[in-house]
Amino acid sequence: MSNGMIGYTQGYIADQTQLLQAIVDGLAVWNKSEDPLVSLLCAEETREIARVAQAPLTFQPHGDGANPDAQKQTYRLLQFPLSSYSLSAPFTKLGLQDALADDVIATANGAMAGDAERVTCELMRAIFTKRTAGSVGTAYQAGFFNGETDAPNYGNFSNYGSAANHYAGLNTTTFAKSQIVAAVEAMNKFGYGMNPSTCVALFNTDQKSGVSAVMDSTASIGIIATPERIRALDQGVQADIRIEGVRCIFHPWVPSGYFAVIDAATKPLAKRVHPNPEYRGLMIDGPNISSPRDPLVGAEYLRRVGFAVRHLGAGVCRQLVGSTTYTNPTFRLTAA
Image (cartoon, rainbow, N blue to C red; front, side, top):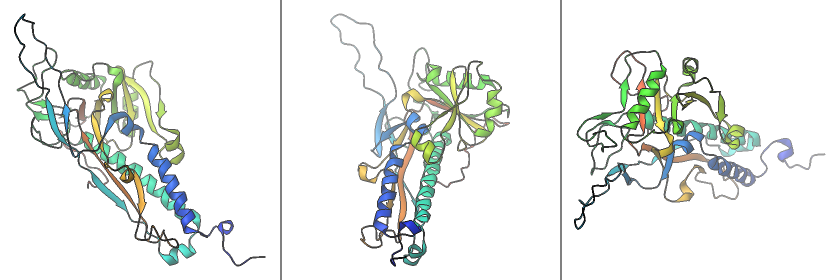
């Protein structure tokens, strides 16, 4: 016989506070299981403007009794904007009275799926978007080299004074192994990618057949991901095909018809997060979140994050197009 109370056994929401706590606990686990590509390529940054060293210092012949020329480390002042993204999927009082607990949990899971898409999209936008060239001493948001003439010298390469360009069209729509080799060579001129095994090449998933055709004979296909992300949503990313030692990664958020080769060992991108840890990761908030009765009424989801390049010579982007001009790709999600 019913006691007049609708409880969890019937599937309806008996206690919004308990359900909110379940969502908060789920988000805590989600926020600890960072996107594997973000972990691979990014260093965390809390500052809006940071000085990032870009070059080694130079030793000179020693002269007894004489002082060597004084040197200062070369820094670039780089901007790392913090963008805000929100998801409004609010429940009303009447909606919650008629909703099942599973409906609310499904909305939270959908928010995590959307968060995964937004974070990966912004990472790819930072990689594949060429930006206006800047210069040492002036703060700017950078991509990889796109015409900077003050790139530091490295090894026997005299880079300073010549325009450095790491974005280019390949004047062909056919992928070839030599294109990966040339991209690594371009990074080598600035001291990056010296060990091909630390480099990754990013491709769209629809390019896998063409890339697999020229892969190293000892390569295989595998998955990289944390167990939490595999259980939660995205099943990881396909990896472990190698070309000349460079690990190839396939992801649907890589723009089709483009690829990038990146020295992952240097963490060449910055993931900008809020300096207050309380405001990092995917959050749930709303006007009634502290209400003891209806905390879920009007609740929304919020993510604050940003990505930008911090080592300008550590990545090369190429477009498979019948031109030598590189055109920035269009992403399904609009930028902040």
